[in-house]
Image (cartoon, rainbow, N blue to C red; front, side, top):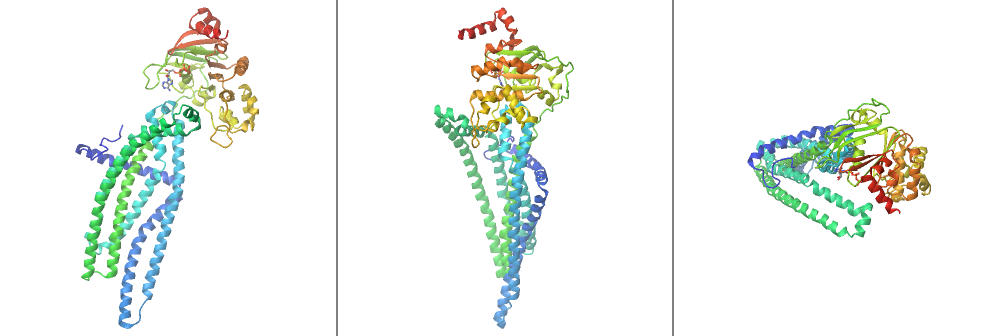
Length: 620
Ligand SMILES: Nc1ncnc2c1ncn2[C@@H]1O[C@H](COP(=O)(O)OP(=O)(O)OP(=O)(O)O)[C@@H](O)[C@H]1O
């Protein structure tokens, strides 16, 4: 939804202009926070920036003032020369030297300003990016799956990291020009107070139009987030190695590229309209300024001719007027720019202030240790989904027991795991671990107790060992533990065959990065789950689907031994694996339809027995 109710094209309806004025003032609320951000990023640089701004603001008027003295000194020197034949050049040279010094100091101040800005830009860009990423760490999985939220994140990442500095630079720029303007105004006031009024008013129309167009540009930027996101996505699909194979073989490239172009064309036409309107108005209103300038020229020239001011003063007033006008327009465009920066910053702060419900649990131990896991009448519907993914689930798994889940694709098996690992919370019912509700557990203690691999486990483009070590951050770099876990995951053998063993870089993003086969990756993921040696719950979602028959047989032959006295929860479509579990549940459309051991379910001769015989037939 657009944040403001005014139309992006044309002027807003009269009833909405108060609203516009309010939102115009409201967006300045981030200026203070931006300044605080810059100040806390580097105090030294911020102070240097302020001092240099002051210097750069004062010097131009000084230059104009000295310029007037040069002209007057020249006129008087040439009069002396005509009258006496002895030119008094000394004062002329002194004024010229002074102006030279001031100009050099001004150049120094401007260089200093751009130096401070460059350094601050780098520091601040990093700071804001870190803030964005730190916030991302606190978010819930559901946030990442919510497209509107994802838009916020993308917008914040794309634009907002450069905006705080821009806002501060513009604020300082505004100050610098204001100082210059006051100094010009003071000098110009001697000529005529009206000259000062004319100077100030001439820039106003173009300022108003700039502000309006900045708002329009922002609203356009905000509305088009979904399209921009699609563009980014298409770039990824077209230019990343993990999609290259399919894009090539299915000859998807031209089709996707056409889509990419179509999006650009649509966005471009909106941009073009806005830019054309912005520039046309800018030109028309800017013309007013030029007319004013030349009117003032004529006025000042006429005053010189009638002898009201000296030639030197004329030079000074002309310069003051010209520079004063550019200071006014710089100030006004700084204000317009600040307005724009504030709008963009609002997306950053909106993102950073996304409410994340705090994890309130503190339990380090359960109320009934050794009770294991219980699901009591658990139901769950994904945010935005029409149908519940799980209905009324009841289960009890005791320590040391194994549970296997079977069911059609989309029946809810992975969802049950997501609830157990607290990635989502049940809508009704409760899940208990050792007699205590998962919600009441301290999050870190709970996570330490669970080793999990999902079907779509992450493939980190890091070293092999780090891919294993990721399973336990406290032993991320621990080579002995890598090996131990890899032995359990049946991964050691192939890892030893890699050029640098555990230190082999994986993935194609980096030099000499190796790609692994699907089954090899899965062994790494299994090893990762075994890294969590303190975990007493092992959750494996299709852990061997990509492995060869021998590896799978080896893993399951040792499974009991590997799992030890942990709870093992297994999702598999292979019944040879499933049959070994102590309990088996069959899930259909989010409900448990059969529950028992292999022999009980075979005796029941229901769904499980049917599927088991179906698969067994295939092997006969
Ligand atoms: N993040 C999500 N947001 C919304 N709906 C989802 C999400 N993940 C899964 N679903 C839906 O929830 C239902 C259960 O999905 P789940 O992943 O639990 O199935 P599964 O039994 O693990 O399937 P498979 O055997 O294919 O892995 C499906 O209808 C699926 O479309």
